[in-house]
Length: 268
Image (tube, rainbow, N blue to C red; front, side):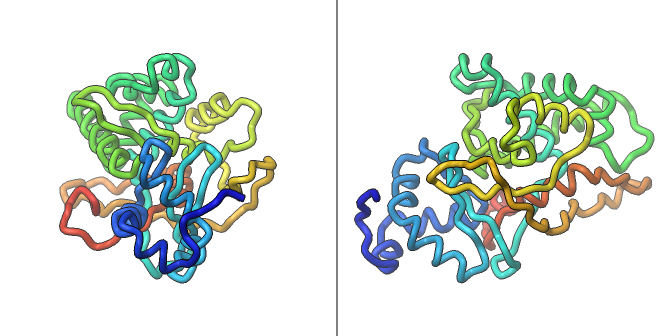
């Protein structure tokens, strides 16, 4: 067993890293090995913090890919699910993350590349309708602009959650936490191909893996997932929204634990 500088929970809480790490986790931030100091702190204090967060109705989860996150198991801390756009973009980013070409590029892709990949996997018309669900009739130019806007907004939100790093206006660096979007196909022999089929077919398997830091035995325990709460309808839209059930259901597996904040980026 690795040595830890902490001998009790009080030592963990009094550590200078605790306030910022705690706030980040509660806001849904995923912390990986690139967050060197934070990741080291969580690794050292993991045993104490697991028991600490259970008292608040949440699980501190550590995945074998090398990242931590907080998963709510009750409503005591509140919860938020990803939007449809965030889900779709996250899945596309995961496919790119698993692409050898992206690995060769240092894990860096572009916003245009994300749009292109989404259109390739889903089909342009399906993508436009998925991100314009409240309108049965739409102007193609306006709809495509809406898609670009929502993809950009999704990338910004995913960056605040630790899934990607925004390098500049066009490039993003992909991070290990994107593998959360591959949960439905965890254990598949060909994860990328299986995930791509799910995205293309609009289907998803609702399972939550039960991994430990000692290794993944390939088994997963099925867990009842909370109902996805879609964004509030836009009063300007006359047509009712058509549900995108497969996205909404899977989104529940990726909910995050927000805290009140004055920062609109954090609670958006």
